[in-house]
Image 1 (cartoon, rainbow, N blue to C red):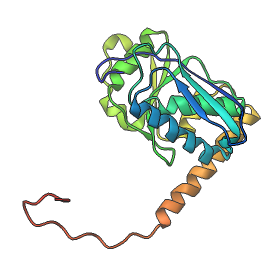
Image 2: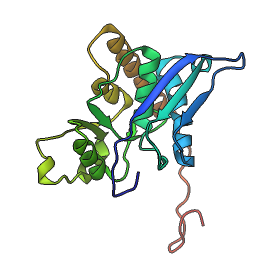
Image 3: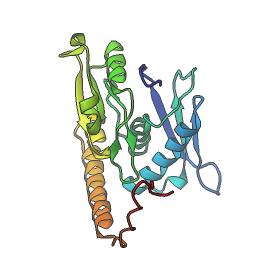
Image 4: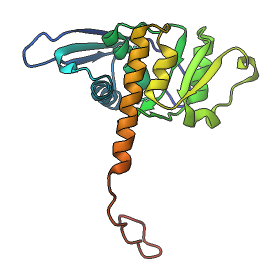
Length: 211
């Protein structure tokens, strides 16, 4: 997806028992570029961490539907995570919701480029609700014809994404959100408790750090 253009790219995921004793594999199709492939691997690790599932027991198939021009960048990270978690947990995704955003190893939704074009493309495709990184809200400048037509929801964490993207209020969804909330909180506390070393001395004037 180019910086100043937007397309809606469906993503499908299927989870099956691993076919070999060596463990499962993650297979992604759709002409993925290097950064997109790395995003798939990062999301796989994140899913294992935040759902508690040992995904090595599964083969995970991720398909970028209709990606004839290829996929580059990591802005589909939240979509990949949502699709795979939906398949693992058996909780359907609301097909009326589009989303964009990168993910940190702690499950935080990170900003991406071209957010205005992406929201407008989603609206032009009939989508009425779009999830975007909270840090991108100030970057969003929609034409007047989109205002009141598409609802833009800022999200900060993967839990926020799943709250809006997964269908219903059943026990499976609530249990998943509770587990995510507990694990995110535990991870945040761990990060806060890590002691920091002494600060590095400032470089001399006129000399860039690291030179």
